[in-house]
Length: 149
Image 1 (cartoon, rainbow, N blue to C red):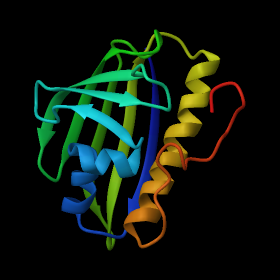
Image 2 (tube, rainbow, N blue to C red):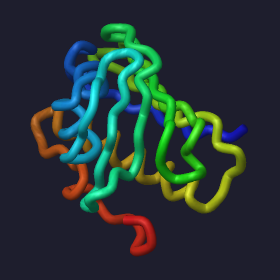
Image 3 (cartoon, helix red, strand yellow):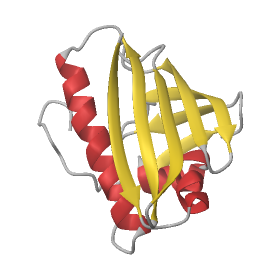
Image 4 (cartoon, one colour):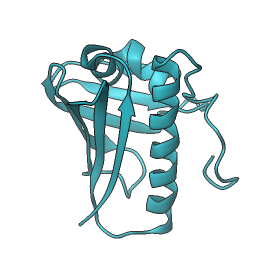
């Protein structure tokens, strides 16, 4: 299996970062401006990216307040189904460190490379928004490819 991994430090308390990944309001700022569903353990979250049909559905697998949010992809791009997305949080030097993992890719296809870059831009946008700048959730996210956005 293949994994995408990123690390970013954000100069706000862990609670603020945790809420961005564990609540629909936070996910609207972080990932995409249309999120539906239940953000509790066992719930499913649907993510929309400018089309009437949902692009991905994540089952909430784990919520450890101020420490971890974990999802399993149950619907979406074939390369994503069955993968796990994890946001681990820990204290850094005057910052909250986010250790992001999108694990379980069957093979490192071109779409995985794209998603790695996209996840990185979203995490940097999250840092910017939490530190007083602008969030970069869809549709305000930077386009990195004409093929996949």
